[in-house]
Image 1 (cartoon, rainbow over the protein chains, first blue to last red):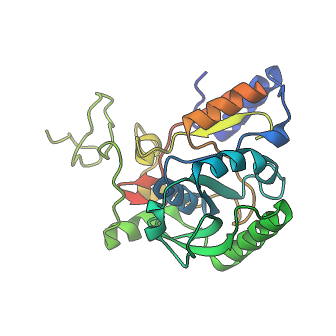
Image 2: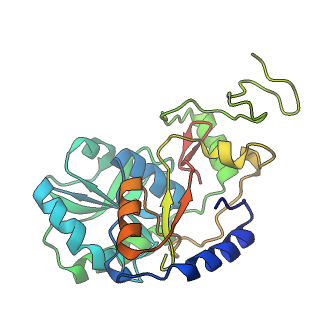
Amino acid sequence: MVLGRSSSFSVERMEIIAALYPATADVKQAEVQDFHSVRQALNVASADQRVLVVVNGPSGQIASLRKSLRSVASDERILGRVHIDFEENDEWRKTVTGLKDGPSIVVIRPGEFGMEGTAMHQLPLNAGHVEIITALLAANTEFATTTDKKVYSGHVAKGQDLGIYFEGGVPYGEDRDGDGQIDRGRPRGGRPRR
Amino acid sequence: MSKFTAITASVCAMSLCILACGQGGPRPSDLGTSNLDLGEPGIAWYTTWESGLSEAKRSGRPIMFVAAATQCHGVSGVF
């Protein structure tokens, strides 16, 4: 089923669909989200204006943490307030300032355009759940009280002025006439240039 | 989040503008602010198809799939 843009319409239809499929497993043990890269995660965290948690370590420990952190990620104080990414490599470290060396759980304040971040807290991989949740709650509060809420139109305009450019997987643009081709340089209401 | 497995395909494959600005939707200059206050919980997205599909299978819940990206005209950090 494809839902339209109206949020009220979407919620109503989703409620009907959801009622047909009650969860058959404990949602408190839901799998933890992940990203394809810290680069992507920073961008999403910046857009959502949430702190980002990067769990960084060797593959064996990461596999274990994907399971053990389920109850942390599903905690009602945490769910929907942070983004979480698991990373086995260290390539991402050059984009985050204030980091200490070594495997760890890093709580990151995403930059305004999600191109970089700043470490807010850094915990060992064997940190207890209470310690992790406490750090996440503190980071969330700090972030929320020291960050200006984005007005996305102004954000885009500012980014264009600053020359911000996030290289994507496909060319940017709009197919406003529905012909399957990106309309380049088309003035609003005018004919597309070919 | 308790009723659906929410997946957003924010994989840079599609500009938010394609969704939000195309075919009669708003222009970038029309974009406003989120309805959420900072620090308040939003949708708990699964941001890879693999993780979202796995959780949907585990919990037996349907998937709400949203195709979007966190950049507009190449400017990142936008939803």
